[in-house]
Length: 119
Image (cartoon, rainbow, N blue to C red):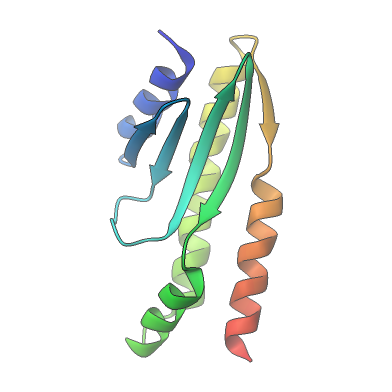
């Protein structure tokens, strides 16, 4: 079983949405309109993990307008993606593949966006 297939199976078994594009897998929290995804990109024998966001400010504004606790919702999504990333890292490193973990950098960017939304 190849690496992207392993990642896809792990994510699906935990209830995440999965989209495979060439050499990467995008993992979402299940709801289609959530612009926060875990992205696993395979290059040679190295896997890069990061959290990608798209139009986060608009999404935050939509949540705020609906009266939802947008900050906790987004933090929950992040936690879910970080948890699945731990499973993936464990499985992939046990197969001898190096993992470059850029999740923390992505997480800090999202937290900055949440702080800016409060201003």
